[in-house]
Every structure is written in structure tokens, then in C-alpha cells.
Image 1 (tube, helix red, strand yellow):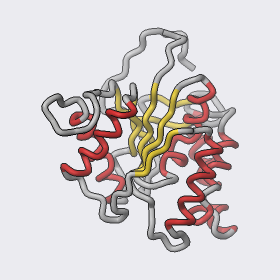
Image 2 (spheres, one colour; image 1 turned 135 degrees about the horizontal axis):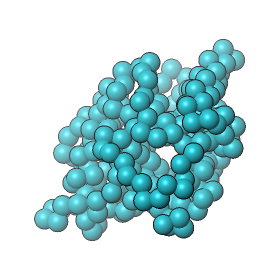
Image 3 (cartoon, rainbow, N blue to C red; image 1 turned 120 degrees about the vertical axis):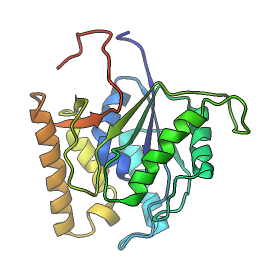
Image 4 (cartoon, rainbow, N blue to C red; image 1 turned 30 degrees about the vertical axis):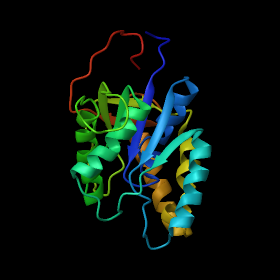
Length: 232
């Protein structure tokens, strides 16, 4: 089991969500030889300092820094994202194409309505993707696990099911997040605030497992271990 490679589908409501919530873990996964795909439900625009063109270029830079080679943008409506059959089907077809072992979604508690809707859409899409009597493109597939990352507009404390040590990947994660200058680094004051939060959150969750930096993940289902050797 130690040598088994897995396929990951990390889903964000907007470009930058996945990077902020689990960018360090993605870099680690790729180092370990796992396959990572990213799906952005919307283009994230409009925002006060961005445009679709700017956000697209920032996303390309961030994706290259992560080392991810497969990233899909669905183009669902930002600010008006809604859990409906059409959205579920669209995501389900991506799941059928990618065929991931594990899906990562935004944490279910958030002040941003789009983030909440995204989680609901993707949880339902996981179920839709396995259906046999359907018009969905692709062959049925059911990801074995959904896990949730923290990148919330609400000051919440995620009670993690586990924490990944990203001490070696943390500085690279910071550079990836900074790629989204229109969101996080449009002036010095903004970047100081975002950078400070990245460090404080990373150090806090790292301290819980005795490492310098960590990224927390939640699960609605209980997790089991096949082997005790990888415990930190």
C-alpha cells in the first residue's frame, strides 16, 4: 500500500481557493508521485481589482508553480452559483473523466454563499457520477472519499480529521498564493494581512502535530488506517 499512487481531484469555487486551502499539500502530493487535477467552478470575477483576463493569467502562473498539468474551468456564474441539476451534472461529467480516488472540496461552513453551494453541488455530483441509467458523458465512477480543506470567508476553526505536514512546501505555497495579485497582493497592506494569516494558520495547525507548518482537512465520514507507520 505504501507505493500505491492515487488520483486527486481538488475543486475550488474560484481560482485561488484550492491554492490557499491546500496548495502545500498539492505540492507534496505531486512530489510523492500522485496525480492531481484541479477544477474551478467559476472564473472568480468580477472582483474589485481583477478582470477575467487578469485572473486567467494569475491562474496560469499559480498552476505552473504548483506543477499541476490538468486544470479545468467550468465557467459557472460567480456570485450566483447555485446547486441545481445542471451544475451537478456538469461536475459529475468531470468526475467521470478524471476518475479520482479522492475529491477535495471547500469546508462546508463559510460566509460566502458560493462556497457553500459549491460544496453541495460537488457532494451531489459525486453521487450522480456513479449512475448507470443517465445521459451523462463518460463511464460511471464513484470517488471513494471526500475531504474538505479550509479557505473560508468566515472566521471558523476547523476541527481536523487529520493535518498534513507542509513544512517543506510552505514557502512554495506562499509564492503560489501571491500569484493572485489582484486578490491578495494588490498593495502592500493587503499582502501583509494575507501573508500573516497564511503563516499563522500554517504554524497553528503545524503545532498541533509537532511540525513547523500544517494544512488541516475535515471529513464527514470516519477515516480508517491500513497501516500505522505514517502517523506523525
